[in-house]
Image 1 (tube, rainbow, N blue to C red):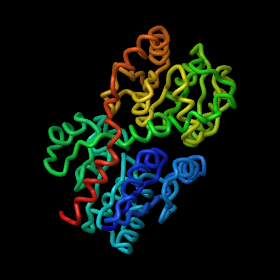
Image 2 (cartoon, helix red, strand yellow):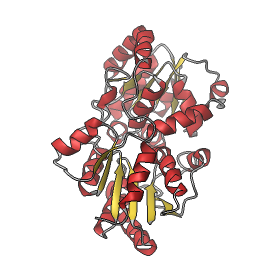
Image 3 (cartoon, rainbow, N blue to C red):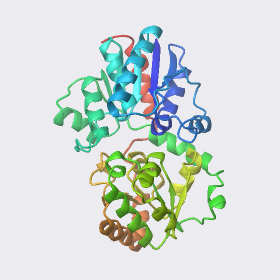
Image 4 (cartoon, rainbow, N blue to C red):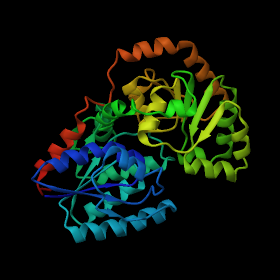
Length: 368
């Protein structure tokens, strides 16, 4: 059985490397990894692959940046060519990126079974490009690996999908637990002169936020008024838009806001785990926070991870007043939030999702 595991961004690398290792161990299959090239800088790509000891990349399509249409179109052509040349029996991908959608469409169009890891998660916000990718991918996929019961319900009840749904958990659980141990060796706190629980970590990268000058300005205004050091490993998209909006100098001038380059995964994991709380629009970080029990202020109006709301995460949008209100509340109630969270289990599974998914794929043979 020939299996292709496709990916293109940092979150996909993190969530799929354990699945890649599980599939590689089985003698019944030959598993190869195809990288779309959606993330292509060293800090956004190769450094993660090196740290996580991902098996070698068989092919990099080197698609690079571009509009949604140009990225997906180029990937479709290149994925199809690669799939046909190699004669894969099964293709698997994770998440909601353009790489995920393109590899799904390319595979299923030519009769190759496709498995979607993280199927069924929904924000129900069609203004998000990621939501469009999720819905389309799930409608076409032969195998839907849902991380939670909520995701299963979304597929069955909201979208009337009846076949191919498997409740597996999310591979982020085993990936985070394993790498928290490795991250203990990180020296990032010392390098940045930080003490545990004395600072916040900030990330912002989603298009619906970065394309709005008003939101970016509101975020900076709020950051400057939070009475705590904030570390911001800035995504290239965010840096680019801040400069385009004439806000880069403002960001650099905020005394308690430290802008740094994107970090490797282990350093970033250490930074988040040891912060007082996190401000983010990232879905993956919301999941990780439920594993190392850190409060998260979600810089969005909705989340496709509703399981964490009121326990680990709270919505604030990118609104100065709401961010400051939520930050004040988290500061005041921090001890009780963390104490309650530690009594809970992460809603994203038991740390065996990769094993389950690998078993289902390997037992599928080439049946449709």
